[in-house]
Image 1 (cartoon, rainbow, N blue to C red):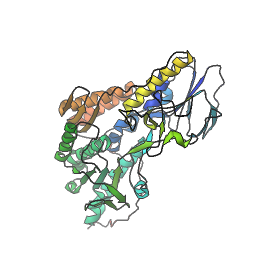
Image 2 (image 1 turned 45 degrees about the horizontal axis):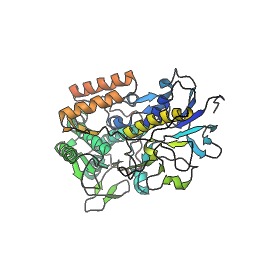
Image 3 (image 1 turned 60 degrees about the vertical axis):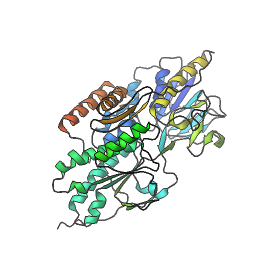
Image 4 (image 1 turned 135 degrees about the horizontal axis):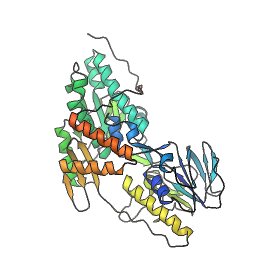
Amino acid sequence: MNIPQTCFPRVVIIGGGFAGLAVARGLEEQELQVVLIDKHNYHTFQPLLYQVATGGLEPDSIAFPLRKRFNDVENFYFRLAEVTGIDAEKKQISSTIGNLEYDYLVIATGSNTNFFGNTNVQKYAMEMKSVPQSLNIRSLILENFEEALLTSNLEDRKKLMNFVIVGGGPTGVELAGALAEMKKGILPKDYPDLDIRQMKINLIQSSGELLKGMSKKASEKAEDFLIKLGVDVWKNLRVLDYNGDMVTTNGEDHFRASTVIWAAGVKGEKIDGLTNECVIERANRYKVDGYNRVEGYKNVYAIGDVACMQSEKFPHGHPMMAQPAIQQGKLLAKNILAELKGKKQKPFKYNDKGSMATIGRNKAVVDLPKWRFQGVFAWFVWMFVHLFSLIGFRNKAVVFLNWVYNYIRFDRETRLIIRPYKNKNEYSFDTNVE
């Protein structure tokens, strides 16, 4: 990897997401050599991926170069690579660009989509965990409408204009709301010779409530907002299969759709090499103690989505969201420095700052520790929090200007098919115009 040898302890961080970035920031300008490894050279602000997928933002406005963030930091090195294995005995990692020894290893690889073993769904459904995947969804949505414009087969047209979102968490709810906004004010202008009323947006949730984990009021209000926007909300319905043409469920309702977006769950992105005893197989997460140390290992830590710190309050670990990841990363940096100085480390205690989700223009739900509110004010709070959390002044400015423009003009300028996406199901339609 061409990392110079030094007398300082070497901290290797795998992953440049919220957790990995928080650790790296906390170790700046210390007597350490910090090596950050990621398969992308940028940090992605994942909460706004759905806006990229629906043409509200360009991808470079929610991504920030990792090298730029640490340009002036001494003893910091970034390598673009994918880590393929860990050898804890040799204190060494292996990657696509070579091997590297470490003194401290921080696994912050995040999570990926959990299809719960359904290979057909995994093959044909769309994911939205990265910028490229969001661009694929954006292209597929627009390509479907272009194809619907040409086909003379009514059933095929309905299929192309039928969208199924599986999962009623924040991602699914926000995506459904954004698609409904497109149907209401944007697509009719782009496709005046297409009956946009035939467009269907289906949100399927396996349990009896949306936004599980938030308050009952937030769940009910979010559902009410979606229904008013024209979204068909299906609760207590579980998707069993999708073959690229038909969505099969455990009920009587089935959906013929060209686009299925899977937002029904995530699992940890673990790395090969550590023992199976330290992994919770169901969630694919590492078992960690109160200091985020991987069970059975001394200088190997896991933080964020890939870490499962079980307790009486959190029997299944902390929520796989940004705040626990950031807080764990900040504390781990302090604990590593404390250990090097011979001081006592502090156990992690999660400070729940609340949850929020937006359902479209002037519609959002916010649950804070002491206050819960919905509607226009919640929407402004959601925008402020997300804008403030973006990295870089340029990104903040670009996103803010985009939001202002979109709000005033009721438009989304970035509905562009920059990188065409070939539909996986490869069904041919009759494109003869009557």
